[in-house]
Length: 250
Image (cartoon, rainbow, N blue to C red; front, side):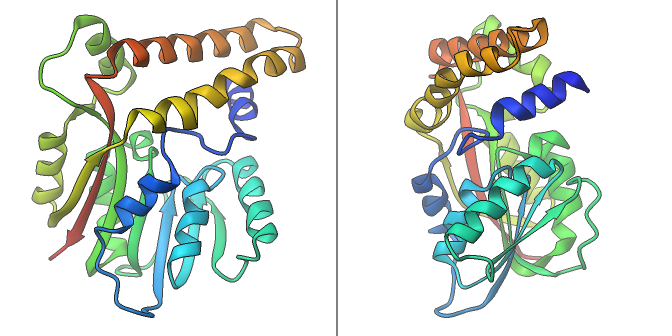
């Protein structure tokens, strides 16, 4: 529990808790057929501090339910929402993504950037689809192999971290087998990892260690982050987040 609290503390003031960018969110949104002035209901599941939630609110007519298990992230999102006068477009919900109690076919769009791994891609698709209207869209970014054959080091690391990691074709097959048709797909660019996520992380190391008196747990978090960053830089040709945009057709 102490490690989890430290990890949240390390990430809570960050703009993003994973790779991504405003351009990535808007690109994913461009694959969704939105009628002019249509009022939409959107669920952003695993929203973190809500960088993508804000982008969606600023570019869609509707209301977004931003869901996260950790209240510290929701506090940050509520602060940004108030600052940007978006209170009428964003509401937050502290809830585990595998214990949602939304109504069947309640939402026009279900969004989740870099978070579905917490319950697994296939489980998330199957669990959430009932909340989506027929003809509605799901948009998810998910860690994805870029090619089928990978070096042993990166293969073993990610198979241990997330056994459901797979190629885009394997993820798309899961969508199709669960009543979705793929509307768009792209890999996040390197800048979404390095400039928007890892570089800000590296800038927080010293302050984080100082704040926690360089405790062994704090140092372990920093070393873990450093290892992941080095691994990405070494093997970025083999792995990224894939952004999947699909339409529920049955």
